[in-house]
Image (cartoon, rainbow, N blue to C red; front, side, top):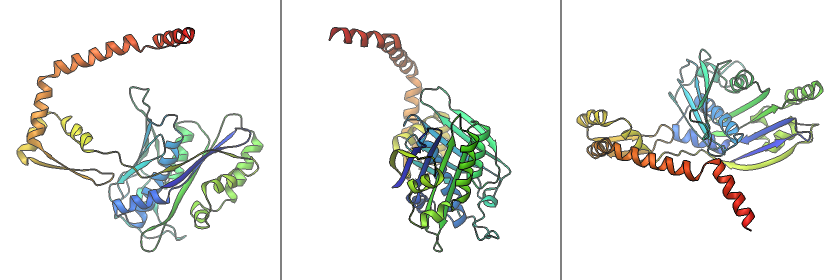
Length: 330
């Protein structure tokens, strides 16, 4: 597992989130068999997603990041839950490009910058997900996430991400941090932060030296007396299952399932995120789809009955009344 911390400055004006995502990116490389450049691209996006997920208010909320820059890697996707656990995939995992002049992997050219970063926030309290979209700045991921926060959420943010790939294509280290200014920050504080960030080595240099996310926070927030709010373990975690995959197939409808069955009754579905294979007999699924179609009125009545019961017994005023009644009975 990988280590993630959240912290805040003493005056509450700056929040920090940092992660050592080495194990997450190693798992992604092993699952997707990525080239060095693709490992860096997917690893950076997974790291950024983990940081963003850990800042959600509810563990049941989720964020999906989708980078489509028109480059040879195709689309890169990372999903995170409210705890910072992540999963991801990349269209073309074997793409490799020459190194840049400075010797670094050319992630920007592989991903491309003639496209957009799409951020989908799924809040359980809302009926529909919130979708934000910004043009890509460089395709290097960190700059693009910074741009998203600046233009879509109007939050001044510093994002630093890094993935170091060894000569044998294994992941030597990976990590990153998000730093955000809250309203009310003074010019002097902003200047101090800029100086701190400019003086910091890269994320991968820090990790290679054995530094932790807390060390990153102390460097970034030097002079701000930061405190760690919480610390947790995060991991690459796919939530696919046979049941969810079957539900997905049934959602295609009976006619579409019949077409697939006529081509081949033995169906194999492979998860894009973890490559787990699920096998189904389409004859059985067609029968299930037909049953649900024939009994649609029953399902609708059950759903309506459930809704009426919830509305009657679990409305907000009703809960308040029950709590007050319980309190005065004690």
